[in-house]
Each structure stands twice: as C-alpha cells, then as structure tokens.
Length: 87
Image (tube, rainbow, N blue to C red; front, side, top):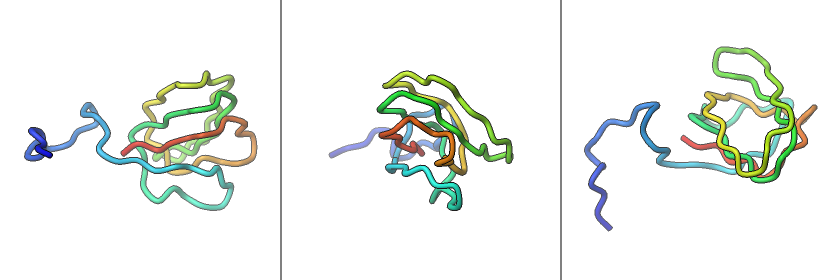
C-alpha cells in the first residue's frame, strides 16, 4: 500500500502513526510517551504528564480523544477502560 506522507516529518499536529493498549498501572511507565489517549469506556482517568504533573480527568466520555503527552496512566483512581495510547 502506498503512503503519500511517508516522507513527511511527524509533528504534534499530524495524525498518530502508531498506538498501543494501555493497562493502568501505578508502578510502570508507558512504553512510550503518548501524543494522545483514546478512551473507549468512559470514566475517570488519572495520568502523569510528560512534565511530571499528575492530573485526574473526571467523567471522560466514551470515545473521547485526549491530546495528552502522558508517561503513565495510574490504576489508582482510574475507572475508564479500553484506553489506547496514540503516538
């Protein structure tokens, strides 16, 4: 399959080119810092951002795309599920 954008540099404004399923964990960083999180099942999500701040997003609706540079998704306090990290 051809990819007309293969020779273009990625930026934070460009679409994600890869992703991975996230299981919230209080002790493990994500395999890669994200450019966004997709929340498949709504609820609260607690993240540690790339800059180190821990933030709780309350009542995130299912199907939400959060443009976050997250390094961790914490299990404690996270009730959302089916979370996907986009990079």
